[in-house]
Image 1 (cartoon, rainbow, N blue to C red):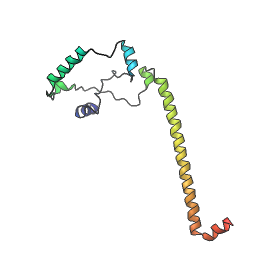
Image 2: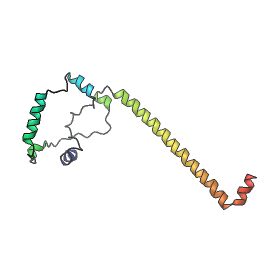
Image 3: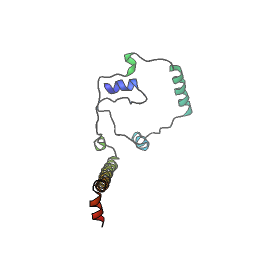
Length: 140
């Protein structure tokens, strides 16, 4: 219900939540067109009709509950599994996820090595500042 409220409060930022079981796997334009065996193009006549209809309804506010498409059903999705939803992009998604994991690990290792190098440099400089005789004896 919170997602529905967010959609009504911020319609451009928050998508309309779907009823349970209605959610489909995300598709590219080509996948959508192929699955419906249709074109997404419209004629100029249809566009003009839609434009006229929008002009007629402009300024009308739909604030009553019947107009809001409010339902008491909600589907909570976390960690969408594209394989279960039947997307052909599932294997590519797995490759991308694996690559992200490897790159994150490498970045973390690089950050740790850089931090250790900075700490060692700091310890060397502080040792020579605290005990100059020891630093001189070690260098000669």
